[in-house]
Length: 485
Image (cartoon, rainbow, N blue to C red):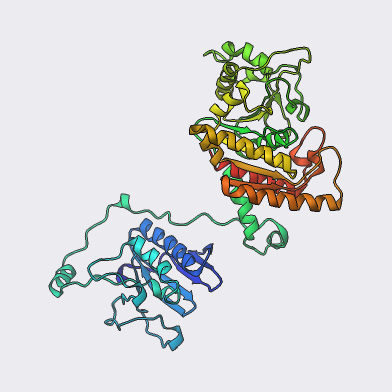
């Protein structure tokens, strides 16, 4: 194996005792953090095996671990063997990887610690090579030497025959030189970012890497439209601010056409908390014009006559009927019509809702929903209403129950939407929000907490008006929602 492992690419692997590690491939660093050392070793071997598989040949790896420095060979199948240095150099005893037998000069040493040895009748495959350290985490030190696997024994005659036959020629279509991973963008936040801007390249912190992953998640495009329903049968549970913030983040980062729809059966408040366009049209006007909007000759820009564009946050709002003298309540059939129109013009639909889970339009909204979001403030009756909302959906079974089990609960650290909160009130709200979040966690897919922010209390809601910590929390909430798409 070793004779086929060239010095390109240059790979260095580090395994530390604190549950971290690093694989560097041709100068590109891949930091690793995991629950324990065995998991770090698994991730390191996976990265190296993927590189070997892309090249279609074994690769040579310089290793550093608690036992010292060493040199291993990793095949495209994930088989790990210890390599003999091309120029023998004296090694201290503590730097020597544990082996069970000395190899013949000039050949790869394939050894296996007793705790990791496979059965004699089997040859370890890639998955076995990666999983073996995890099984031996309690029995032997986790090192790259512990991942060395036993090579199959060959009969002398077979080995001689193999040596005299020319190697099978590989097709060029099975070979690629594109083995480099994307270069990690330097840090942009905090002191690391400051140093990077001064010319000292610094890797981002774990917090910045987590933020980048959330941004990547909310920036995706999915085949076909997605509908999010924001529900809680109690008023004042933060439904409308949740609809606005999720719509703003998904629209800003993904660039996808996004609409926030006030599906209140009569008159909702979404139009009061968002920017008004140059007309007074609502969902009833859209339903009345649905035939024209769904016709083959309809153009995308025509939807602007019925929705209200948010110039800063890049999403549209479909208002509920705001005629004080009207007595029309949206029906299930009208929800179907409006949803059909909106999925023609938008990729993402975020639906606000009323407080009546028995209403026809509420139940029809659930029928069209892909992801359920349940907002709640740090008040026990809001939390109880959220629990009952989920319980109602779960009791209905089928699609409704599946939505409840995969719901995202968003707990806002606020108790009164009508006045600013004192320091003591904020402390109590944080404690109550923590209690509520912990109680919901076993029953739903994700729970996200949002800090109190006065910009969410009154008036039109703007993403840019929020404090940085609030923006970050809403980004995490939107990422949790997007993962359900």
